[in-house]
Image (cartoon, rainbow, N blue to C red; front, side, top):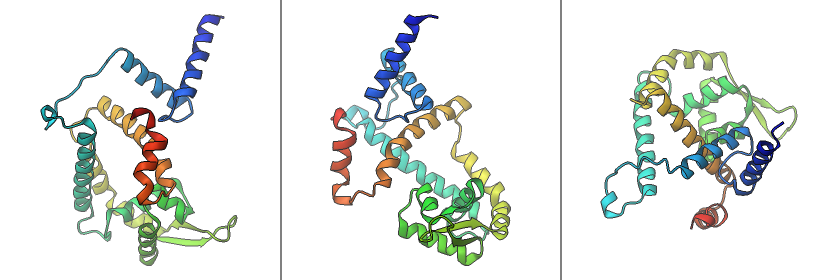
Length: 221
């Protein structure tokens, strides 16, 4: 057995556990961390140009703007996918897709899965119940909670629109090739793992920015 290699691996795992703030504490997070470490050490950075760069516009500003733009583009295609359908909003079919894919769950589990606040999520769920696309029943483990399921009618209306939904989904990824899509998934997944625990804490708006900066980004300031 190569004990030198084994010691190096153990030391690498220890470094990962000590420095890790943005990756999941599992083999997937470990692999992503190693990948990023190698890129940093080898200075593998193909820095693009962007509007306003010469005037000092930060990469953080560009990233925020592009994410907002992508959200708006996606919503435009979703509206087209819903044209002449029984859906009122894209959230309605996203909720149904989650229920069909992941099975029954509590109302709050579904709302959190879609990263929405409780009032907005409850409005969507109530509309779906009124349409007869989902049903609710009391949880057997927690009488205070209600479990919701997609109905046969919900599956039918979803399947009727799925071709259009898949078409919209395909258009959103645009002209990216397979490798670019995989890299984008990796980066967005990394951001999602950073932001989701913060979102689920429901920090009050007045304290949110300072709290996140202090607790999660202090080493970058």
